[in-house]
Amino acid sequence: MDDFAIKIESVTKVFKLPLEKNTSIKSILINSTKRNKGYELQSALKDISLEIKEGEFFGVVGRNGSGKSTLLKLLAGIYSPTVGQVHVRGSLTPFIELGVGFNPELTGRENIFLNGALLGFNRKDVQAMYKDIVGFAELGRFMDQKLKNYSSGMQVRLAFSIAIRAQSDILLIDEVLAVGDAAFQKKCFDYFEELKKKHRTVVLVSHDMDSVKRFCTRAALITNGHLDLIGSPQQVADLYDKQNASGIPLSEPPVIHSGIEITNLKIKGRKDRKFDLEDSITLQFSIKAKRPVNCVLSINIIKKEDSQFVAAISSDYQINPRLLKSNEEAMYEYVIPSKQFSQGTFLVDGVIYDFDTKQPVFFKRSMASFTTDGIRGWGALNLQGTWKEVK
Image 1 (tube, one colour):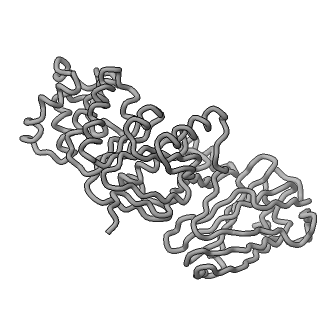
Image 2 (cartoon, rainbow, N blue to C red):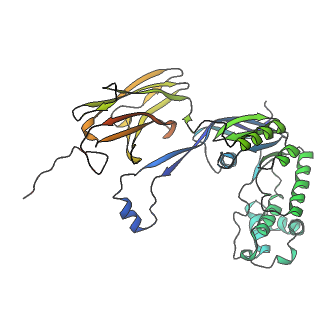
Image 3 (tube, rainbow, N blue to C red):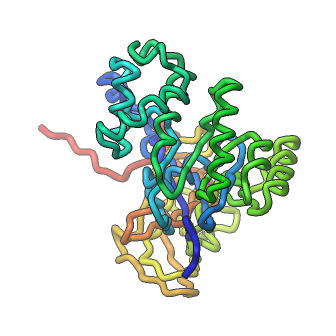
């Protein structure tokens, strides 16, 4: 049997970001008149595969926004993967958002018992470790003050002091040292040394390459949601430093690709892709599956001149979802009358959904474009409705 503590298999995580915010009745009324409704897909992690052995001290590094914290939240079970699987063997304690569950209106003493209960300790357990918690945090004379009077550093010290009492098999640690002073950081480093000697499994996210090289046995570099490198801490730190020095990301811009893809999206009907009112615009999709998937094709149409989100069109309204087998190819066409568009140039995003999970498994921006010589207007579409006078 494999001796893994964590196994990540072809994991992709996609978030839907709304294009408008409705925070009041006024904003709802204003946004109801706008054309840019819908959402944008943001791929935080793309096809990540990784295995962490029992007893490893594993580092995860990358620039801000690369997907490190998303990865930890997937491991902690806070998020579910859009595609792929995460396997965790043993109990796990995440030090991701230290202080979650703290009540600012309660004292430090009361919050120790509250947070201890959230970690699964009973009152006797917390009473037995209370002195050690307070001593580690060095907050003895502040324990009867309300938490809202603590500085952020004091709150993190208290939260970390409680969290390390959890005797779990795996620890997930995300930048917990960022707000600690030098004395507290030394205590944390001593604690890490103890974990390493005891061969506890630790996943550490950090921007501090000295810490990664000092404690980690292996490390990974993530860039724009892609796994760029798994190697020794020295190799990963060197590449991370090079990446920061150049200011140029190593990976390509985000594209969702999880075992199925649109290999080509053609605009048919006119070679120059410029259409008159009487023309029809034909979008031809060539798709290929590397794994079985019950797929639904979709397109987003965006007006290029002002980036208006025009429409999202899905195949499942007219065609039953198609079950594609491994290595199977297929072709679809979608025909739109040109007169439905106002004058302008339109961009087409290619999207594939898994019909069973309702999640996107492929997404790529601006795969094709076309220009229409339609009726000039304020909007992007000329809807083909019918007017009549009612007497």
